[in-house]
Image 1 (cartoon, rainbow, N blue to C red):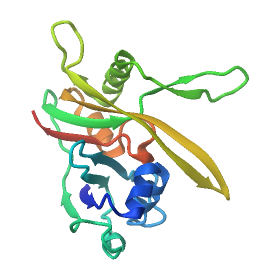
Image 2: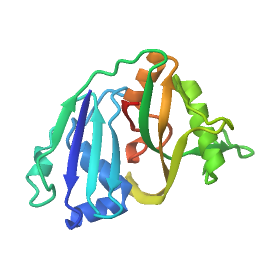
Image 3: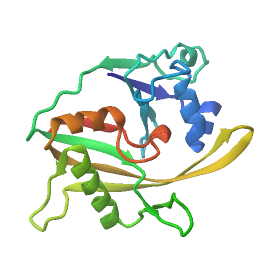
Image 4: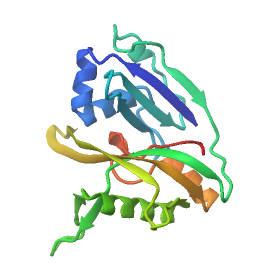
Length: 217
């Protein structure tokens, strides 16, 4: 696995467009990879804007090695050369890890006469934590809880992120309600957890959600 850290110039016009449009940011990131990646080779990313300094950090995780030369050739797009490190996801049952996850917690509501329901954002913190708890059960991890049973997770609402998806000469509006989870988890199933780290968690993975960052607890 490859994890890239890019420091973007917040004063650059293209960066400003990509901050405002998640789809444009997705296109720029994918320009560093072959046009046809295997379906199971997910490229995940997370955008972080420092609340006080305005510094913009882009983290990109991929199986395939990225080629950032195209971005490096754009004058003043990057503030410094990309930093890339490689790692192999290996975990053990019972391992405790600090984590950060930006996600788009949603639920599908079925509509009469349609096979696919509408995806509706979960905006209450209790519902968001319940969503994350369910994801943990599916992906092989457990959230640590307080004596009252509530997860020891800090939830920060990042608000709506918008964009326009371009397909077949048509533009489709994109709206994501993004939250950031920070907390401590316990690995319960190393194999499923490794898959979650590689493939991401939840919807909107192409648009900055789902990348699970980990550190020793």
